Amino acid sequence: MEIKKGIAVSPGISIAKLLIIDSEDYRIPRRSIEPSQRMMEVQRARNAFKGAISELTKLQAEQEAIEQRKIKDIFAVHLRFLHDRSLRKKITDLVHLESVTAEYAVSTTLREIASHFTKAKDAYISERAADIYDIERRLLRQLLGSKREDVEHLTKEVAIVARELSPTQAAGFNKKFVKGLATDAGGRTSHTAIVARSLGIPAVVALEDLTESVSGGDTVIIDGNRGIVVVNPDDETIRQYEQYSLEFAELEHKLDAIKGKPAVTRDGVRIALLGNIEFPDEAELVLQKGGEGIGLYRTEFLYLNRPSEPTEAEHYQAYVETISVFKHRPVIIRTVDLGADKYTQSKRFAPEPNPFLGLRSIRFCLRNLTMFKTQLRAILRASVLGEVRAMFPLVTNIQELMQAKMILRDVMDDLDEESIAYNKNIQIGIMIETPSAALMASTLARDVDFFSIGTNDLTQYTLAVDRGNELVSTLYSAVDPAVLRLIRTVVQDAYKAQIDINICGEMASEPEYVMLLLGMGVRTISLAPPMIPEIKRIIRSVTMEDCNYLARKILGMNSERQIASFLRDATRKVLPEAF
Ligand code: PEP
Ligand code: MG
Image (cartoon, rainbow, N blue to C red; front, top):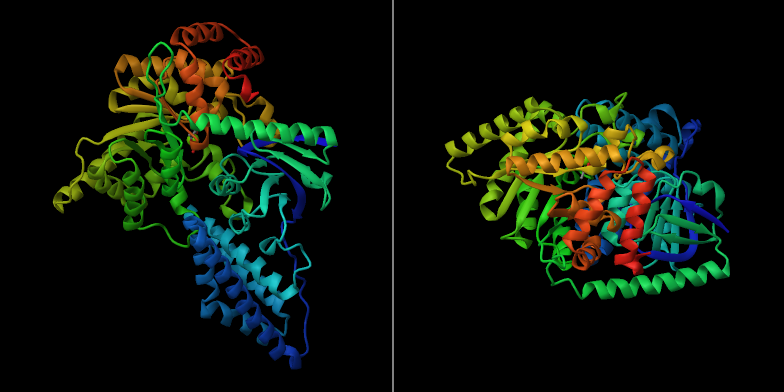
């Protein structure tokens, strides 16, 4: 039995036999053929296209049935590429002209296209390279036959283990049979994590070398609550996990019972619980889980899995869909936060030497004004339909904020000229995600209606620890005293300036941190939808007096370890079932 620790990205427990999926990184050597064989190779290439199209069409139809729109979108994009006649012609021409195998022609042609995409200055276009590699793999699977285990046609329950997964691999999983996911690589915001959450499959990422220590057919426990994978568990561990799984289901059931009740402390302080979403259809889940609005809509996910930038109409449609679920409740739309950890995989992004410190988030938008304005127009147009607020990510100084607001005013002027309605008093906020923004919060507060503390990035920039790097994950802690002091500064400055303050990093989804946040003055929390009931339960079990006392004690401590263990003990007393 071996226990591995990674990062929990999608809750739940699964116990199943594992299926290892390799990276499918086929290397096709150049092999010349006789001129007489050329027609046969051309036919093989055509058949591969046919096979890939029918495979994708079938998958698309299956997803149709379960209405996974974002997954369907990925398949639609790939089908469009596969139907492209000029692509086929390029491949068959290569077979004819250079007398090479169909595999070689497919691989060379698609890799050449992918490499053009990768070099594109536009980050969005360079991201499309991943789709091309995906199509290459699908075609090569057709040509080479599937010696690999075929995850798309499963007949029994499995847990998938891989070094890393491509978005389409993850999106193609059938929830009926894929009971859990575990990968060596990845972070909380990787595609795999997003898709796993959207499918409701327990998942753990950043396990570093899991694939090296397992073999196909081993039994694994994937604990998506605690980020643990147990390989070949002994009977006693299986029994314990079966018990834990039952308790977890019971707790979930119990928690469901408080869905309709307000998040209010025992001494009557009301807390607003909002949801973080990546796709509009998740708004419904937020509502189901008892959330009262959207505190963070990560709109950059609109840009993924498609060959071109979303149009204004597509932005607008996504916002309308989200707002329709929360008509009279806040919907905070964050402008695109592309770059850095959203594009970690090497094939996806023209490499910047230091992407976390590079052209990301608001910086990226301010350099891509057409794209930025398109989104702002859609947000403004949607603002008349509900309580829409706009939020800029990763603002690091006042100039960036001023520039972003100036662009917003330009877009408002355009809409005025066209007599298009929008909310002239739309609330504008910024994310506080860097030490510079936290330290300048009192200045920034004069020009915004609200702050939202992004603790995921704030922690990594304060502690100089890459949030997605599994090698330094033990150094990454949102309750490090340095991070807590910055959070306290921001909350106090927001209060002084009388602007709204909320917190939307993953810290807000951690049961152990809730009391501390309340004690530090936070009254609005935005978090992953599945965690809303549990966080509400804690809020309803504590008094603000307890929380204030706890925060005072914590803020006097200098060691992260001491803080973490103090918080664990305090939470255990309130919600023992969660441990
Ligand atoms: C954050 O940084 O805390 C945050 C919420 O933004 P994201 O996770 O999308 O970077
Ligand atoms: Mg962030």
